[in-house]
Amino acid sequence: MKKLGPVTLPADYPSDYHRRLTVALLKAFADERQQLNELIAFAQSDALERPLSLVAQGYAQKLWSYRMAGTEPVYSSPIGPITVLNGATPTAAVVFSSWDWYVYALKVADGSLIWRKALSAPLYGRCQAADASGAGSVQIFAPGQGAITAIPANGGASTWTFTDLYTREGSGTTTAATATTVTDGTKTWAANAFLRVEGVGYGASLRFTSGPAAGQSREITVSPGGSTLTVASAYAPAPTLGGGDTYVIDKKYSSDNTFQHAGTLVNESGTYYLYAAGFDNHAYKINASTGALVWKFATLENIEPYPLVITVAGNLRCIVGSIDGKVYSLNASTGAQVWSAATGAVDAFLWAGDTDGDGDLEVIVSGRNGRVMILDAAAGTIQYQSTAAQSWSFPEINCASVPVLLAGETTPRIVTGGDAGTAWCFNNNAETKWQRPVAPYTINSSAVIHDVRGDGNLCMLIGDMRGTLHCLEIATGNYLGAIYLKGGIEGVPLYADIDGDGRAELVITTTDGYVEAYRLLFGSVNATTYKPGATMWAGYQT
Image (cartoon, rainbow, N blue to C red):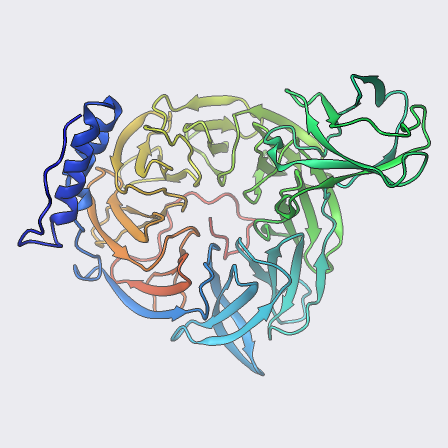
């Protein structure tokens, strides 16, 4: 292996020093690992030279910055503009949740704090908001550990809390059908649906609450394939095989019992519903006015992104992707399964659009296998999938694949980013149009689409976990500049005319606890990105 000589600080430090040092370090390892050649090419490109900011180029203007007290990160996507109450005064606000257990409402005008509402646990995902009760005042729906909470416009006492998660604490009585023989001092039961069948490292225990084995608890594991659960050691006395012993299965980590997001808010004939998904393996439909459960649907693994709700051939469908390796289409009225598609594990947001121009919707899926797939929304068949998976050792695509119709083209492009720090553009057959490494950091945030230069050429704005919001021209992949923030960008920037000035604004949250607002100085709020359906609340954001 090549050895590096002593390093001295050059005259151009720090403007170009980090780039050249990165190249030297990567070259030192290139003889050992051929796969680093791509990384070297990236490091030698302009990508590691700090691109000129969109602000410095005159394409964007910073409006305000808010810094939370403490050191907790903000992972959530902000929503707005929402009219909340500042005391008794209606005030336009941006709303987001934080890992510090609070929901925040900031003034659109200057980013100052209107109020914050403490909940009972760290908060990760996006809120929702609407006048769901019809009382003339907005309610904010916040996700959390084990609950979705409805908060009034003044940030006061919660109006309802939904806690009906399936916590993997299922109670039941052992029967001959579920309890089998004792083998080598170990008892096995058929695996219950609520047990994690993939990623069993989370762990669980089987605890008897009645019968001869009452009070006893044993660690359990799930067999390969998830067909049985196995108790680590024998019970004494043994449970009654034919019935009589009542047990519960206790989860071991509270993260298994949580909502990542408040869900997708849909107005159905004047009644608002939240379509939510949880780490408890379930999708939910909840009445947003009352918090009452309408239905829930079980998958075999956790569901991280919020559902996609679209109208397919005149029927409202709730579509969810699960870590169990499938995408499900559900009847939005009943929760009954319409179809499932084997896509591989999915923890990225889904999107829909008429990608082939036939008048019918397709569902666009980004997966952990590093591929983009296009599914027929009516039948669930996979029409196309990308052949170029994410490179290097990070195959996951954890952000939505967004369809965008460019001027002069009849079918949309599809843009996304991935864990390898690469921005991608596909055609409507999921064939690669271009790919560009933009960061040596993970991209978890979905793209925002805007005509940044005001010349009719749409751009994608996509953030990485270093804190850079990259801007690329969709037609060519040309890099136009960036917005630099303090902390990584996990949530999707709010993209809207938040202050009513006729221009688009971005509100961006970061893992260093900052919330910053920028005005895009050219181009109107983009209307050429396909939206999932007209039934969505106008504030729907990916």
